[in-house]
Image (cartoon, rainbow, N blue to C red; front, side):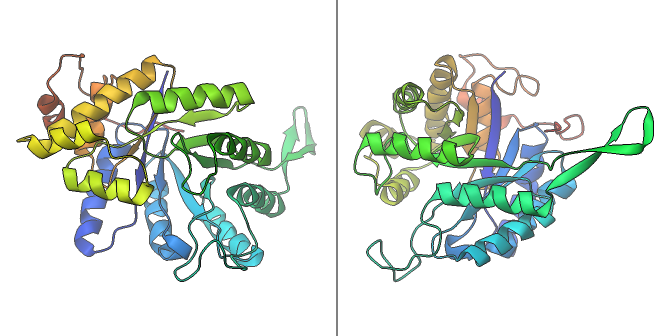
Length: 328
């Protein structure tokens, strides 16, 4: 059965915080595999990220996944941060290299002790192994004996780039980098945003041929306006999808266009073998949940068919009194 999960980010204002809390309740009520929380550049939102993660752990049964970046950090700083998240109960991470700190570029000699996301993956596993090296298990029939086993493992996800990393020299390098992250101990990959299903499906085929065996979750975002689309393309460096831009610019209800586009891609991804969908939410629940309903992943909340109008999907919301988060 395909899974689904969500990404959220720390609120920047009290009003944003209220909206986040409301959406978090709605999203968690549908039973996602996990909810990930972003981490500001150079740790600028560490405490805010941890606060949201703690809320997920305290108020839901959903696994909380912490984003971590390592560029510009020393081993000691990164180890201390990882331990802080682990001590708070977080056992899942999305390990990212991150962008250089403000004022520095790739040409600068010092960008920290960790040069890649793969090194951060290894460090997360190492810190957890040092923190809880083993556990004692009772021996059945002998109350005075115990058996030692390895301590609990962390789940470490990494990013994948169907349309190429901005600093990558070739598509082959993107696959090789993903292989290196897997060899370092990553157990899950989540893709950056893309605009056509084939971008993901072709990338996964090439990754499998190269030896990548971990799950690769497609990252999907309902684009709700032309301005948002332009901003995303500016940040990612991807090619502007001209047809989607035209439809968003001319639509009376651009939100409906954006959700319809995401539903169309999501259905193709799932039909093509994607193990699930990871939704970038922008801390809102209406459009992401409409996408999941349109893709048939929330039939337990609101049944849908390929012909269900998108505006109907947008109007439907889960009933919190009867929905319960899943245990993951």
